[in-house]
Structure formats: C-alpha cells, structure tokens
Image (tube, rainbow, N blue to C red; front, side):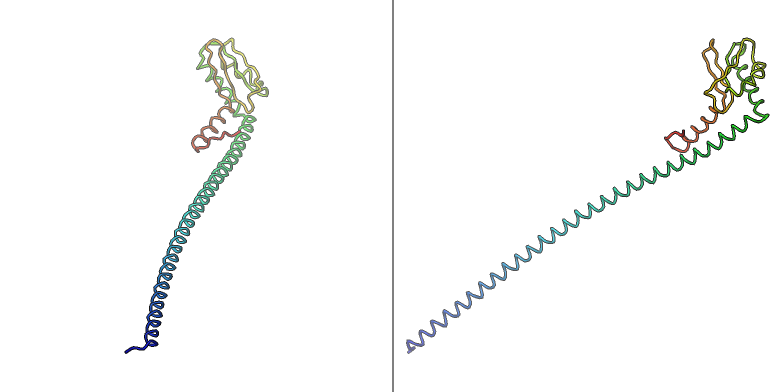
Length: 200
C-alpha cells in the first residue's frame, strides 16, 4: 500500500510535470507568436523598403529625365545661337563684298541692266526709280534705259546698292536692290536650315 508521503510525492511530481508541460506550451506559444511577429515585421520592413526603393528610384529617374531635358534644351539653344552667330558673320562678310562690288566698273553695268528690266516690265509707263544717295551719279545711265517721263530719286533706305522702281499708274513696285537680294538669300538659308530666329 502506498504511503501518504509517496502519494504526496506522486501528486507533487504530477503537478511539476503538468507545470513543466504547461511552461513548455507557453514557451512554444511565445516562440510562435514571436516568430510570427518577426516574420510580419520583416514582411512589413521588406514592403516598406521595396516601396521606398521604388519611390526613390522613380524620383531619381524623373530628376534624371528633367536634367537631360534641360541639358538638351540648353544644347539646342546654344547650337542655334552659334549657328545664328556664324550665319550673321557670313552674311556680314557677304554684305561687305557687295559694298566692294558697288565700287567697281561692273556695278555700273548692273545698274544699267536693272533699269532695263524695269523698262521691260513697265513698258512705256512713267516710273520713279530709287537708288542710294551715292548712286545718284548713275542717274543719266538709268534714265537712258527708261522711257520719257521717268525720274530717279535718292532713297536712304537702300544701304548697299541697286535700284527700286515704283509706278503710280500700275501700283506695282519692284525691288532689284542688292539689299533685298541679300535678305532673300538670308531668309532662304534660315528656312532651309530650320532656324526660326531671324538674323539682324
């Protein structure tokens, strides 16, 4: 027969085993909860990191695209400005050549032919021919190519040379000046090169 002490010892052992089992269960539950929380925290951290990386990457890409766009615009503007400057220098040099031409014997023949073209266009209608002040010395040459009743006047708007003609009866004006020819060449160049800025 089991003694009272043995019964107590068995009871205490049973309680101890039960407590040990319960402690293990609690520890397992705590470990499981901790593991789940850690995994959840890791998932959330990963998601936040990925979202942050995606957001920052988008910002970086956007900033890079903006910077590239600004740089491309600056380079296009710089190229256009350079082309305009070079073109201006080229046409300035051409203008100088035309000024030199007006001091040659060939210029007198140019004036004569220009007056002849006016005469052919207007027939016998009286017209007014305009030249720069320095070219008034060619007045007689111009009038000799025209019909009677025509006249030659100085025009300060003509800077390089050549002639312009006006007919009061027909209302048609013709411009055969070197100035207008140079401007036409300049405009043609700008249109063909795709530049919208006009050279001065």
